[in-house]
Length: 252
Image: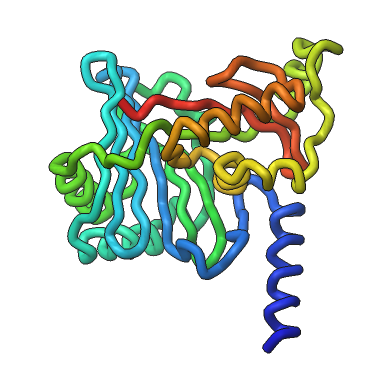
């Protein structure tokens, strides 16, 4: 058993270093084997909100109301979350991983950008919400309806989110940063010292909970120590998994 555990650890570490942005295996398979996070936006309605859920019924919903963020979180009926995960696993769009982002430039309806673990792989797609089908929409609305009844969780002070940067965007960033800021690859050993940052990079687009001022300070200290390009609530980092734009978002 000891050799098997050691081998699994080595494999997980290798996947962390070599994975790509569309199919990332969890660093530890036993942690949140089923988890999903998503953003719904609409140019016409000028709305945007974020929702995530994990197996067992825990949900987080972050909305913007009257120009201000409002976070709700807690447990809802496990069956509702279970039904939604079933629709995720049955979704043709999510299973095909066809990202339609480039075709939605002038689309004004609701757009869903969703990340989810399917068969142990982290997948992300973006498509018009209506294209996910009626069963998916119903399961989604039932979860959101219950999430709206929840209160703000006491242990959530802010969130950290990492968005992958690729190609020309990353090259342009390097030019803008210039010699004054560090754009060299930051080693994984250094990133591991700031656990929320490590989680954000492993799970792009997910709002990683910051539970204290000390956790926020650990991130700003990291920015200063490594001379990262940006400011205290938005910065850029180059890692073995690629480049990321990281943001600290208010919970309330």
